[in-house]
Length: 122
Image (cartoon, rainbow, N blue to C red):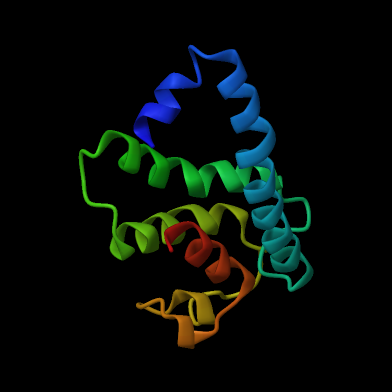
């Protein structure tokens, strides 16, 4: 996969196919998850979905691409807990929300935002 990502900058056809077939479906799913989070009041109504997608995906992708550090559930949780507060609705105490559970599992259910992290991590 790392070769693909380095190759897309040199091969215009590969880059076009990647940007047409790989990126949009994933960002669409992530955008829908964020829309659900907005509708549920988990994040601000004026949240820039593209910015939130990039803020959550970027660190995961960077670690995966460079391979300099572990890419595991703990880093996914750390990113989530660091990024999401910037997008949270104000005036609501989120410290006891479901998505602050210490462990993500398929059985834990959770909110739209927790789903986003699961989608990226799994």
